[in-house]
Image (tube, rainbow, N blue to C red):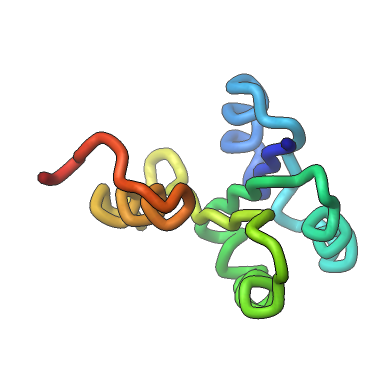
Length: 106
């Protein structure tokens, strides 16, 4: 199962070093992104906040119409920019995995 990031160079580099399958610049052509979403090998697509906002309509449209669990779309915070609270990250993990793990705030 592939994990893809869509974001800025620093974020993509960090995730590539962590072992994600592919890192895509956030200015990817919409049709190319649609092809990545259709790829049955892709299980998780991580979007930086700015990329998520840019492709929000496509993500929401795909979420409403998809007939299988994957790919899972997840918005990730960008290093140095506080746009997602810890509670939000906990909720994103719970939504993505279907279970609560750890416990940032019990």
